[in-house]
Structure formats: C-alpha cells, structure tokens
Image (cartoon, rainbow, N blue to C red; front, side):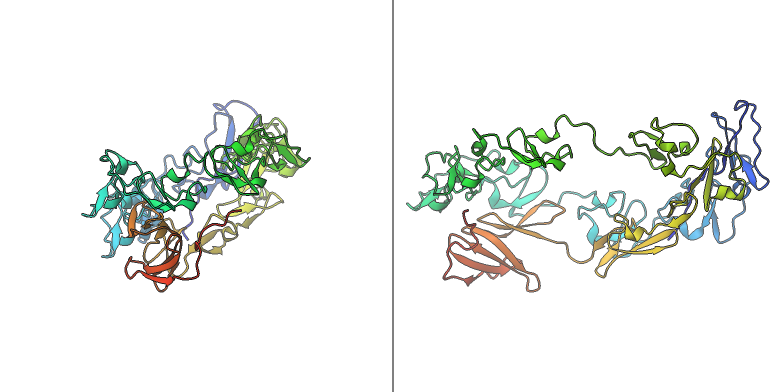
Length: 519
C-alpha cells in the first residue's frame, strides 16, 4: 500500500526573550531552523528535510529558495519539486500534492466490459446507472430517464409503472402523478353478501372489514369502523372501532390508530431504575437524554443538558470540560483547558527541567518530536499510535477495528490493505467491495399484485397481477421460483421468477394460510 506523510512539524523550541522580529533561534547542527512564528516560536526540523518538496515547517520556509532536485529516471518530477514514482502519474490520485501528476492525462482506455469515469477510473459496465457512486465523482450515475414500454405509464418524475396501475386507487408513483386527473369512476358491480366493497370497487371477504389490516390497499376497509361489531373477550375497542389486545390498554404505547387506548389512564408508578414519561409510560432511566424519543412524546429528551460527546479535530485535544485545544498546547505548563486536564498526570507530562529538547536524542521520542514552549511532545506517523509511556509508537492494526475495510483486511507495519471475498470486487476507493453478478431484486405483494423493485432505483416492475389476495411470499433461489399464499382462495401457489408457469402447490386443508392470528 502506498504511504505518504503529511507535513510534519518537529522540534518546536520557544526562545525566551525578544519578539518575533528580533528573535535569534539556534537549532542543532543536524537540524534546520524554520522561520520564527508570530507567537515567538521556533521550529527545528531534521536538516535532510530541507528542500525535499514537503512543507515540514508549516510556513514553507524549509522549501523557499530551494533548487529543484533532480529526480531519477524512474521517478516523476512534480511541479513543486517532489519526486514520485512514475507509475503513480495519471492514476487518479493527487500524489504530488499539487495535482501536477494528474494534469494533461490522456483518456484512459477502458476494456469493452468497462465504463469510463470522468476522473479516469474504469468500472464494470453493469455498475453504470445502478444507483451507486462507483466512480467516486458520480459520473456513472448521470443517467437519462429510461424509456417506458407501451404497457407502462410514465410518472411525472420519469419513473415507469405498469399501465393498469394508473388510476387504480393506489399511489404507485412516488409523486402521486398516477392518481391525478383520473376520469370519473365507473360504477363497480356489487359484491356478494359475505364480501365488503372497497372504495375503488374491489371486493374482499367481510371478515377483513375493520380487522386492523389494510386489505383494500387504500384503507377504505378500516374507515368508519365505530359502528362495527363489538370486540371479542380480551380485546379493547378503540374509538375508531379497531380492536386491540386489552393488555395494551394504558401501557404507554398508542396501539389504536386514534391513540384512544392511552386516554384517561391512571398515572403509573415507575421504579427507581425507570423514567416516567409525560404519558405515564415507564422507560429505562438510561434512555433519558440519550438523543432518542423513547417516550414517543419526547418528554425523555426535554430539559436535557448537552450530554453529547463533543468532537474535536484530529489535531486537537478534548479537555475534560468539553473544550477543544490544539494538540501543541498539551503539557506546555499552561492551563489552556481551564480545568488543567491538558497538564494532568494522565497526559504523561514530564517535569520541565529545561534539559529536554528535540535536538537531543529526538527528545526521547521514537518517531516525531515537538518542542512547545519548552515541553517535549511525542507523536507518531500515520499508521502508528502513541503508547502509554508517551514516547514510543506501536503499529495500529486497522484490521482489528471497524470502518477500514468492508470485507477482508491484511495489516502490515504502518499500513493495511483491503481485499474482497470471491464474487466481489474492490471499488476504486480501495476499501469497500461490490458484489459481481446480477443485481438483487426485492419482491413484495400488494394483495392483487406481486411486484419487484431494484433496491437502488425505487422503480416497480410487475411480476404477477390479477391475483385475489396474495400476502405471504417466499422464493427458491436455485430453482428461481416464487411462492405465495392467497387468503381468499385458501391456496398456496408458485410461479417462475419471470412470472410464467403459475400453478397450485397446496389447495386443500388450508384455512387462511399466512394470515396473522389475532392476539
């Protein structure tokens, strides 16, 4: 894995007298003295870092007036004088740090089965317009609207739906345009005596009327239920007519669609380990002021102090009082935090004897050393962390921590490399993996239809239609079959994943297969 080091500020030494204009700072023979800062600080860096193309001083004084070095024939000479491997030129990464290695690059030739990104990367053609930013610059997702077929309706947002979904009472377009400007409804034939007629004409079994489920698809079978038959023993009737478990009455959760099961409740007594919500519900005390509305009325998140952990920048130190200060202010003998946490023993601050500095044995630091107002501060290169002694550095095992690689990870000294399992390919970010092969498809039933949707496109396509009352779904991946239960026909059926060859699997001995049992 390629490694690069950012600008390193090492060996800062405070001069005791004078101002920034008349200070004279002296570093050791093996060090270069950077320009004096406005705060009166002098920075010492190793002499070999002068004129190496890196801004080690932080103010470019170590690179001013330098003669550009001569790179080897195997290297590329950046505009800023830095030398990098020639193989890194025009690879899409800013290795020179001034982007000169990525200028005037010829278009990269991609393979026939690849898509050329605008930033020069090549990705698989099947990743083009799949909803993922695989290129990194989103150029693979700048897609034209697909053309709808003759049997499809185009929504106002450009998506396509089945033609017979237009003006069917269901909002199938995300913008609702399939239910706008619909012609006057044609009177539907009446339903049988044991059936209930939905608002848009469909007939369902009467036992599904006011049962709490949206069997019609437009909730018309769950409206005006106040005059419906009384609830059974062990159930509570909501003001809307819906029946819920009697044990759910006054439990702090609104189980009725009109919240009537939580009205006129006696205030509950919570334990010492619980918090009482405004509604009377008891929740865990640890959920108080955790940023989540556990009470459902937000009362557990009211009158909270800011208990969130403040986030400091990578070059800052988080004080105990929540304040952020620069890392260079640690162990400088000054109470910069205000609570002295930057000078506490936990920071491994050493007594300021005046004898320690970065010019002598690198200040005792294993890697990087800073002198801040007379105090030594050790830091580590990228890929390492400071140990408890405050001096030595140990390799960071990125593979043992979450968030570095999405699948496989190989750790090495100061670096790591991500890799993918068989059937996956590493993306251009070199960290995440993407599955090869066909896109996944999500199947779902809408009582009268079984539809499929590509997860990244949110666009329906029709698999099976004109069903009676399909609910529960299952599939056989290897045989490419989809199974469903129909609670009206009392059947379990199956079909090919392309919607062909519909046949019954179980047709006898079933009573409302797949239907939820009432509590």
